[in-house]
Length: 611
Image (cartoon, rainbow, N blue to C red; front, side, top):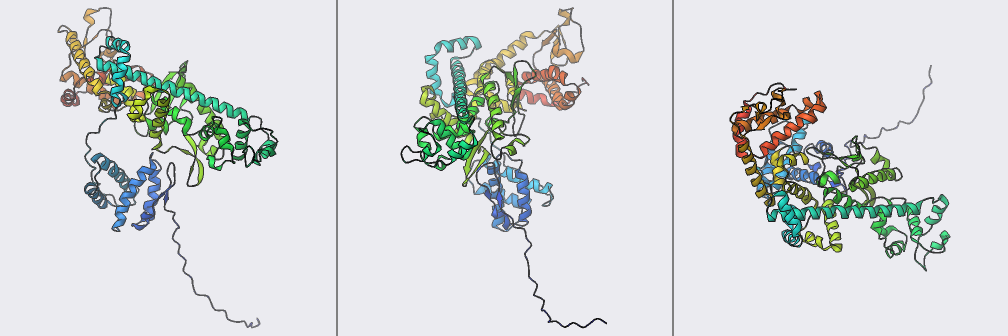
């Protein structure tokens, strides 16, 4: 039998309650700077789930700081009365935004649109019940960004007086008026100056890079250990002689910095004593050193202006500053050409081939290769290279006491262009009016557009250059005070040409042309769908029926673009795209009222199968 064991009875401790709620850090990361405090979200119903979805939704946003701050305005409103995120609270927020805010209607609409999109996203994710969302504010007409010529009208007039021979040549060449020719002459000149001076600054930066690279070449581990001991670079009080150097020099100073920080040079406040003053007295301020060691806003501001002032690329600011990647400039399959790609958050990106001989190709291609090489040598660099698209505009900066490699803040790009303009003005008097005119990067694209129109271009061609989907968008760029009269003049000339080309004896083809084969028996008919490329075609006088045909054919091509591209890529580029361009160019010469009147007729036109 088992032996009975006696032992003291131990009391079971009371059960303890442990809180199992997750420890959420209510911080929203942004593209640069400190994260956004979103603790207010914890005070609304299902706050943790809403916060998780906000982080997911924010990943695809370009301007994360601006976008998230606008969403938090709505969430703070919800939290203020302990409500829930719903269609009803969104409608109440809209009313509050409308009555308690003095901002312009378009500004209110922009804020509300972001909030509405986020609530719709929550409904799609089944976080909140699906309901109909309130409509946005009705937008007012948005004023187009001014051209450089519009910002400095006095400078345009002064330039015309000093360069009257150039202005008179343009009047004769393009058949424009004096004020139009003056704007054209000044615009072409100032864009070229921006472009060439920026390229010169970039070349000087490359010289700085070569100087730094030469100073750091073949530096051994033993030397690095010696240079790292230097804490004071001053002439008499310093300990720099411990590095076995009899005299100070720029090369010596660069090596001390490299030994301590590698390629990522922090603020001069963190440098060994005396290094910043020694270099500055020899023409090397800290920002010049930092940009030559790695890269910074100091050198990238010239790359931005060089791209914005290129008349053929004509990119917008965000495409260059935030959607230029380490493969934006690559050799084209076309001999002697370089393929250029700048992305875009909305709309089509810039995809163009330009000559390799252009200076912008050489500097961007060289910078791409340099950045990729340096990212392999610096802490955290491989994380950028492993991205699907590694941004080209990176810099090493300090935020909240911590240094890191970052993209630029959205607000910085405007200051970069202003800073370049101010620097050029200190060297060249012609830029002084541009400083007073407050020129920013957003003024370059409208300027290039206006110059295209003044130089004889059409709205249709400009539309494709700017990658716009709608001609109405292009009109806001191309139809300016300086181009309005020339547009009217072109429209009248076009109408006169159509009238003179009308021949009552020729047959209408139904595609916007008359058939002129009776005048040239050597031309054989290849089918009605080939009138576009036929030498016997004759343009006819426009009327609602013909405008409807142009619109119907243009709409059909756009609706079937994907299929036409897939079936025959070469035919799309050599036939359909050219045909679409001509139809849209013809419609661009018509008034909006005429196109609208033809819209009903266009819907009833059946396009035959023409693949």
